Image 1: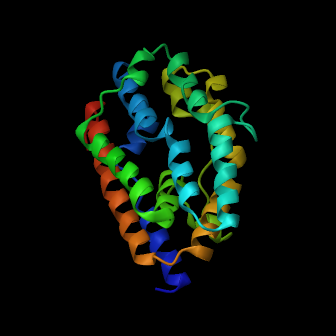
Image 2: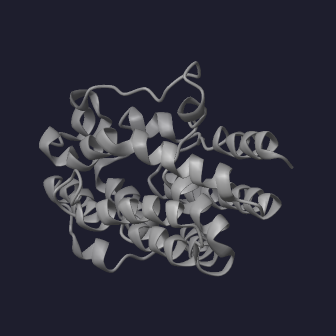
Image 3: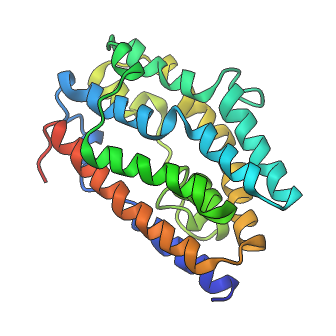
Length: 237
């Protein structure tokens, strides 16, 4: 496939990265005593080790300009040295801390089966399938959302950004806005990271079929993971 076809194939995957339980999470339908299941899975499956995923793509990549962008992403995620001031995984933990959750569960998580399968896929995709798949999965699939088209097309709908005071955790669970430092930082740096991630793949990737296949595999495993967590949180489709 050519560049335009490759781009459209990737966007097609990302536009399917939605889940039936998201509105329910947004409406505060998860019982407070089960909310920890959602947060600890997010942390253990990808938030804690996201810098590692990016680092794996970095060490495999033969292109200096792509490595520089990956290095900047890795540096910010691992240290917060560009924008956040602290490592992003640490900022994430401010949320369960502020909600009074047992952080021991985050240190020793017990993953649901589909969550374990998704995490195993993330490790395999970033370790064993070359830099193109590693970069696509880490910087496009994991870090991206269904509004990726707006990164490439200024006329496409952008991801809605409601005030932090309207964040579901603030509205429904009493989370202090100050604990959403990671959300605030992501909003500040997200645009540059998104554009750099797309530019790297569209300019340099040649294993288009392998990348697209891995993206669809990621989507399938991610949706199953989200299903498992939603059910464990007491949500019904």
